[in-house]
Length: 219
Image (tube, rainbow, N blue to C red; front, side):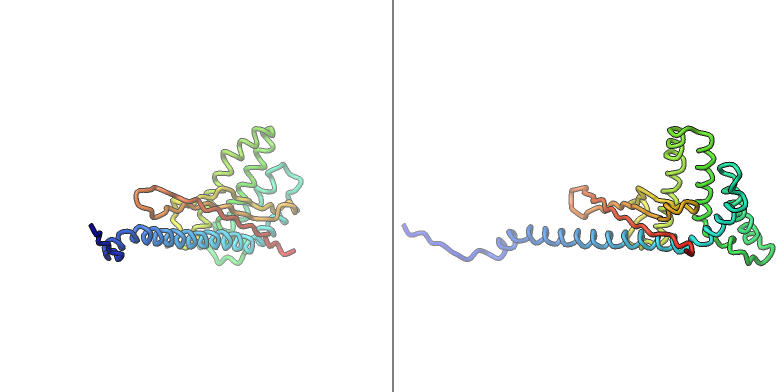
């Protein structure tokens, strides 16, 4: 008996065999593009945030120098309290619209006011608590507030079409010191979760980016 063979497969069969590989390639390409776009957006947001913070630090440094000169011999949080009070007084005048405010203190961004307030709280608690208790206080009260404030700052410079607030986390925030020359850097370490568009699989990839910048204080 002679068997009849056909070396040419049908178009439908070939398409059926090739389709899974084509779909896998398309999904892989989509995932790569999505991760690349999110990665670039996260890095740009973190970098731009610390740049703006560093560039805006000079007026706060001027106030720190003034307060330290006038109240440096007071209790631990004394000069910082005066430092913070000067800022708030000038900002109140601007907010109330009582008069035209030419004082640069009135235009210091909210985040920098928070920095000074955190510094005040830390100095006051350092005076009251022991080392271990102080570390716990900073970890439970100050650090979460710092990270939350830095997250809002990152979102301000982020591409909101790419980065979503719920997926963004600031894992570490470095606040510079205006009284310690050895701590002049502001820094952010941010994480962003990207959900991959893979059918039937709930797969996420966590991107991590960091950015540090030395604050500009006029010297």
